[in-house]
Length: 365
Ligand code: F6P
Image 1 (tube, protein in one colour):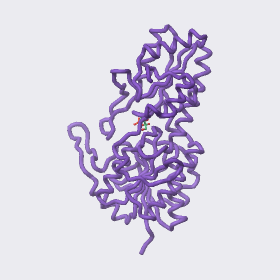
Image 2 (cartoon, rainbow, N blue to C red):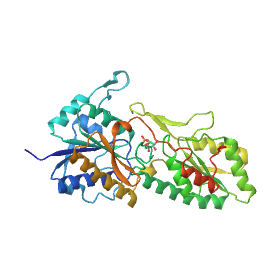
Image 3 (cartoon, rainbow, N blue to C red):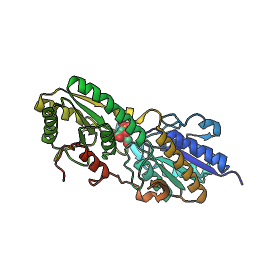
Image 4 (cartoon, rainbow, N blue to C red):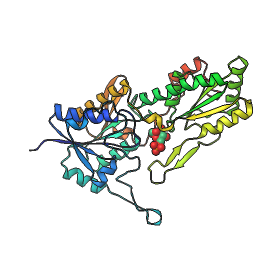
């Protein structure tokens, strides 16, 4: 009998720490378990199109500290809804059987899917077709269910906090209101935690619809107390009470087509008009997804990868690695599929932010 084989792919938006997982899986599979590793290029696209490579120890040498993913990724590819053609010739085909054939032909004993909720959902569907899937949770949004944290989040939080720190000094010098828009989709974790760490005066979250009058009154209140500047940390997914989120674009061929972004410009204009104080906006965008992973993310990604390989060897399939209260545990992928973990209003972070005087732009009890 030949060596056992494990496949790995990275799906969805990239984030710092993906390479640390690829490295951890490859080194553990080869070094500890004597297995072979197949890396699929560009997430599920590689599985659909049969594009892959054999990963060896030397393939992953020196990648621990690199952002991005050496395998590439795609947040559009979906074996169950593969898009062919454009315009009038555009149609959707199910390529999942073809993917399963490749899985069998390659003699894979398991496939490790590293990604967010979209990747876990596809992984869950593939496991229903007979693939042995192990999920590894990544996302800068920290919006995956069943795990206290995902790798990538700490690095993004660091980038956002550093940006807030830098914007603080210029806001102070020019007596302006500086708006910092951060990513996070429908979850406010990134805005909330970087907002607290950076000392944001107002923090606007998707979970707490804001009232513009409340933001105005906080900026004015600070002015009255001699604080001639304010920092407003805006989550891209926030919206006014009774209003809508702001979309930057619709990516038609993506399973999750809405790309949020731009609401901070609208709020900044309103605040400038109401208060007469100059406002400026910094939308951090994909800066938050780039760069070298923090030590925390390298550690988390490495631990996740080792646990994922342990699950492969022990036959714990159709589960995702999670961290719960400092323990690495497997959780059924179905508990994670098509769900989002948002900030609960009784979160200790909300409590802490309020205690140090941050406003959420709304009256909350
Ligand atoms: O899910 C990660 C994320 O960076 C979100 O925070 C953001 O809304 C989205 O992806 C951006 O997607 P794209 O890379 O397609 O612009």
